[in-house]
Structure formats: C-alpha cells, structure tokens
Length: 145
Image (cartoon, rainbow, N blue to C red; front, side, top):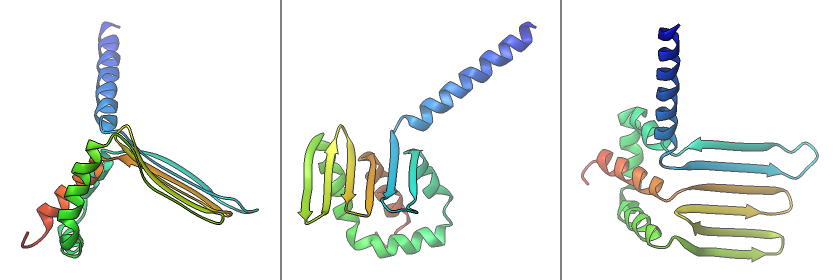
C-alpha cells in the first residue's frame, strides 16, 4: 500500500512538473466564429511551448526552404520581437472600414490580433516571446545567414 501511495505521489509530481513546463511560456489562443446559419466555431488553446518543439521536429530540408524564403525578413522579425517586449501594453493597429474592424494590440506580453466583420470573428493571441523563438529557429536553419 505504501508503494502505491509513493507511485501516485511520483505520478502527480511528474504531471505537475510537465504541466508547469508546457505552460511556462504561456498559451496560444485561436478563436474563429462564423456568424451564419451553418457557421463553424473553432476554439483552440495550445501551450506556446509547442511552437519551438514543433520546429525541432520539422524535417530540416523543409525548415531550410522556409528559412531561405524568410531570410530577408529575419532582421526585421528579430527587432520586432525585441521592441514588442519593451511595450507591455500598446495598441499597434486599429482600423475600421464599414463593418470590418482589425485591431492589433500588445497586453501583458501577449500579442492580440482581432479581426471582426459581419460573417467572421477571428481572435488570435500568443506570447511575444514566441516570435523570437521562431526567428531563432529560422536563423539557425537559414543557409548563408
């Protein structure tokens, strides 16, 4: 019985540490709602740790091709990620055109992109650090950088 209690305690501890690691960078949230009769509703919450881990399992030739295409933009992406971390609460874009509304903000280290019109509501948020993680991985894979 004591062994079973120790095993359960070890399992719970491992589960807690795994959860803490998975969510230490934050959460990526994607909400898509279509406002029509047969519209779909997609709501995803994914740990931001999935992005750098996912980039590690992408076949290198595919990542190298993507990095080659993104190479001209990598310095700008790197600077963007550094600058966004300096502004914990800022409104970057707010555009209204009739019934269309697009808003990009930074709040508490997360980038929020909201696009709303008559038929679709799209909301995406992710930690700003995710941008630098992607830039790091692309720079490592970019030929000639």
